[in-house]
Length: 131
Image (cartoon, rainbow, N blue to C red):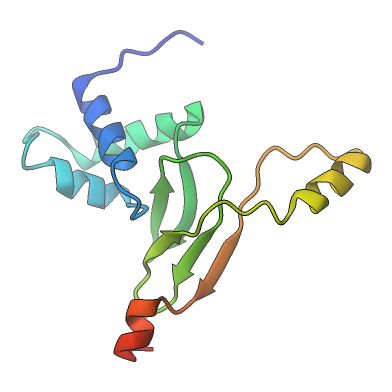
């Protein structure tokens, strides 16, 4: 594949994605960048996110309220999704499934990726008793 031009808009979109651990949506990235890049379109954000996913530079964690939530950290790690406020949290590196990966490998499977998602109520919502 030919190397693509890394435009200033593409760079800003990627930096916005990687600068937060809030697992943003395309709309969040657009809203964050629009004041500084007035000619930015939401379509440009979506096209660049699709490119980042294709290149393995971003991954979709989940879809909440019909919006993909993204992560610029593509190393395998688990996430917690609050079913009350829809926040997505990194919860560290979880290697507890290494035995499963070993068993799959021994049985001839080739694991290409893994996603571990936990769902529940985050501490903020729990403390506010919102659920």
